[in-house]
Length: 67
Figure 1 (cartoon, rainbow, N blue to C red):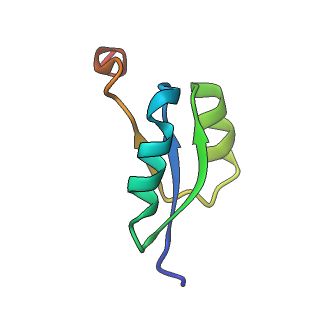
Figure 2: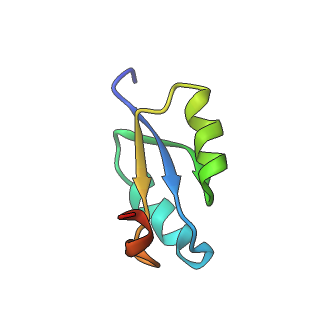
């Protein structure tokens, strides 16, 4: 299974967590290795290496991300 994408999910909306994780996790080529809700936790997870992709849940406040 060397072709798996190791994914971190950035999600600040706890109510969306179950839906996001089940939809992303349903992809056969994805392994979710972390879910984080703040920039510091994201940075910590990225420093460890091994993450190929970050999914950002932008629905709650997309304007914050465009700064």
